[in-house]
Image (cartoon, rainbow, N blue to C red; front, side):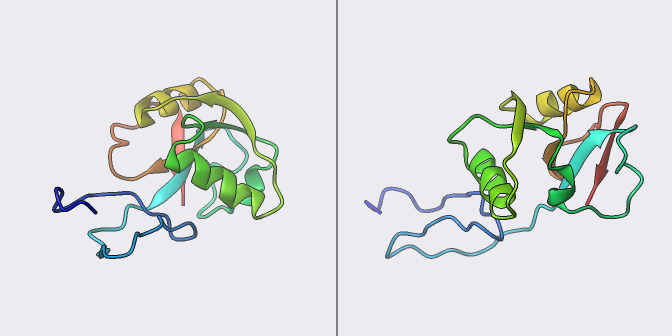
Length: 125
């Protein structure tokens, strides 16, 4: 807003868009679909598609409190009447996926940056 930055690449969720200050313009660059990552033996692992509400009793592996992705997950689950159970927090997707592989919970896994997928982890849209 001071004029010393020409471009910012930011994360924006479909149901919780990032506020945009007056005078700035937003243009989408790409969509990064996010799936739910879960242990391969999870009861929902064989599904073609899941709803986040189906994970109401699961422990979530999420980002630190205050991080945009964490706040989105809390907002999304709470808007469906679900109080999320947070089991673990990790800043990196690969750490989160490692915790999923260890059977410690489920996480939201955006497509970009999640490969290679650890053995024993499946994702479902």
